Length: 241
Ligand code: CAA
Image 1 (cartoon, rainbow, N blue to C red):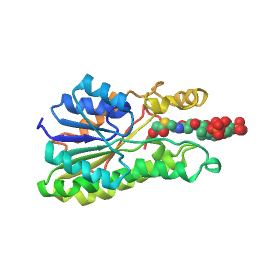
Image 2 (image 1 turned 45 degrees about the horizontal axis):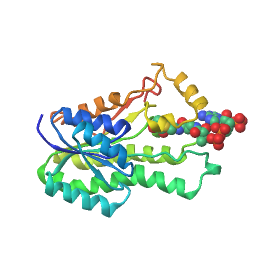
Image 3 (image 1 turned 90 degrees about the vertical axis):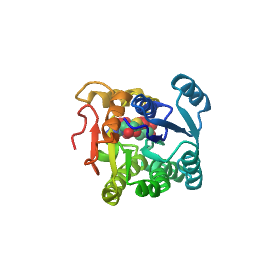
């Protein structure tokens, strides 16, 4: 596969880590973004040889600056995976403005920030592969997650709109909607609640990060040039949409 530059946000841990590794193994030049966990990023770099970049995906100016630097130092970003995401769960009647703003800005604002920073370059070269990681909870809602469900649902709309804009320019834009995957984020769900969720997954288990990476590889392939605006659900059969 062509050695294209790929930026994976939230790319050093959880689902993003598996995506970064899979892209590297396929011959891509990967840059894995992370927000705060320096120790995890250092360990990831040492283990995989993948370069990391620390910045806040919710910060428009920071994203633009880093994208310019990557373009100058490594080359134009031709594959973008918007994977970074956080949860601040709580029922609406207990949720404060900070929980709402943080999730909307990090999970959805980030898609605007990164896509805006790379889109001119992709349009100029008539090539781009963008994958936005949504969620089963953006498709069907989830008790305790009005913020997260709204952001992830927003990602699905964002994807379909940008797909239409990119179609004439060789840029594909797709979403993946993971179900419950075995990561730190999902393990933070109270055990009694998680148990009930797993009981509703027909496959009878949590997903693996590699299950999601497999979808990203499919959608970012050079010859995946007729697949755009789609949502690939990878959820063990929990929600068929
Ligand atoms: N549907 C209906 N009722 C529910 C419910 C559900 N899914 N979950 C909890 N309840 C009910 C409880 O039974 C309880 O009712 P009673 O008071 O009558 O007993 C009431 O709601 C309060 O429940 P909690 O004690 O759990 O309330 P809490 O305020 O302590 O916590 C919560 C609420 C934060 C939402 C907690 O239940 C929770 O963390 N739930 C999990 C949310 C979740 O699935 N998050 C996904 C994170 S992973 C992710 O987001 C990745 C991805 O993309 C899939």
